[in-house]
Each structure stands twice: as structure tokens, then as C-alpha cells.
Image 1 (tube, rainbow, N blue to C red):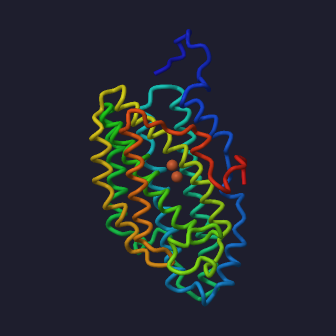
Image 2 (tube, rainbow, N blue to C red):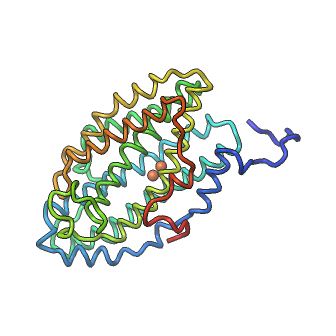
Image 3 (cartoon, rainbow, N blue to C red):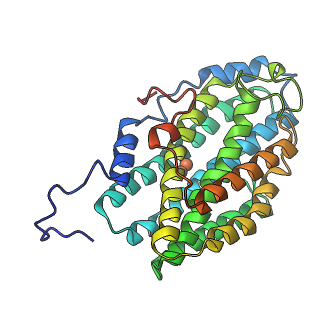
Length: 315
Ligand SMILES: [Fe+2]
Ligand SMILES: [Fe+2]
């Protein structure tokens, strides 16, 4: 770990290093979850009363509750990694990730307060809290418990294998496979550019939730950076620190049934079989890159390039 008394370091950080470049990219792409306009989503949901209410509205609430809960969980679980990282650039990058997870949590809270609750009131539906037990399921709880345990293990043991296990749980399964699949399903259903193969009825009949889609685009862009960092670290631990490639393989195999289980009680407007298939493909591609000696992770600019999030500035 760098110390003030190490006087031959040159500058303190190195923007040309891997983590230094990721830090710069995160700062450049700063956005404010409170600046996104959500009024249109309220109107759109109210305009679809009758066509999109009752069970489907409940499924939207379930999706937003679960993904907000996931962002809250990863915000809380990340800190032990800060103790395990040695380089100044890596620590600087991690502060951006922690800040971004907190912003993601804020976005979903705001969506609940400013869109879902007022719409439920207006439509005379039961008003619920996003933390209500009804939004959990056993696989969801099991997955986030496993992530928390894998991260907390770093407090006692910072060996390469424990680090690889932590990254595999957090960055590869929770942030890449689970979150990207979840965001893909919401975007498929509620964006005009959504995927009809994933929705249970023509997408044109569903409300266009521009605010939700814009927030998700920003979040996915941040997640692209987080996942790139985690994948790079798992690869490095395998190539340079002697971690066996069976470590990430075992974690991914163990957690995949929980990822699938999180989507099985979501029925309409998305088809969960198509979503689980997307998750499986994502997982296989991740494993291929991590374990392929020549598998390169794309540059950070490519990882964060998500349609709708490309201006790189506050929304
Ligand atoms: Fe996040
Ligand atoms: Fe993240």
C-alpha cells in the first residue's frame, strides 16, 4: 500500500494504468439520479389504465423492488473490497463504484416514490413499500446472502482465491449476469426499441416508460465499467496469481439456479424462459472470457457505450 513517505512514486495515481483509466471514465460519466424526468412515466402509466394495470402493474413493482433491493445490497456489500485493494488507482476506482451503487439505489427509491406510488393511489390500487416481504423470493435472498458472505470473507482473508471468489460473486454474477439480465428485461418491455421476443404481447401495447429506460441506460453503463473491472481482476488472479479457473466456474455454476429462480415468478409482460436463456448465454460468455488465455476484455469506452447513456454527462 502506498505511503506518504514513499517519495519516489512520481504522481500519486496513474491515469494511464488500467484502474486509473477506469477512474477517469467514471468521473467523466457522472450523472445525477435526481435530474431524470419521471413525470412522463406517471402519465404514461395512467394513460394505459385498463390495458396495463392490476397484475402487470404489480409485476413492474416487483421488478423495480427487486432491482432496487439488489442495488442496496451491493452498495452495502462492497466495502470489504476496499480493504483488500492495494494500489492507489484501484482504491480511487472503487470509490466511484461505491458512489455509483448508492446512486442506483437512489434512482429506484425515487422511481417508487414519484411514479409507482402516485400511480397506485390514482388507480385505487394497494400502496406498497419496495421493502415489503412480498417482493422477495427464496432464490433472491439466497443469492444476495451468498454475495454478502463472499465479500465479508475478505475481512479475514485477502488471498488471491478469496478475492477471485468475491469478484465472481459480486462483479460477475450479481452485476453482470443478474443485473444486466434484469435491466434487459425491463428495457425489452418498456422501451420502444425493446425486444418483442421477450414480451408476452406486442411491445406497442405496453407503456413506454422513458424515465425508467433512461435511468436504466445510465445504470447499465456504470455496470459495464464495474463488470469490466471485476472481470479484469479475476483474469489477472488466474493468469498471475495462480488461482485455478475452477474457482469462478464453481461460483457461477453454484449461483446460476438462484439467478434463474429470481425470474421464475415474474409472469408477464416478459417471458421468463427467454430471460433465463439470456442470463445463461451471458454467463457462458463471461466464463469463456475469464478462462480463455487470450480472451480480452473490451476497452472501458466500449463497455459503457449503452444506447441512451452515451452523452457521458449528467442527465
Ligand atoms: Fe449498481
Ligand atoms: Fe455495479
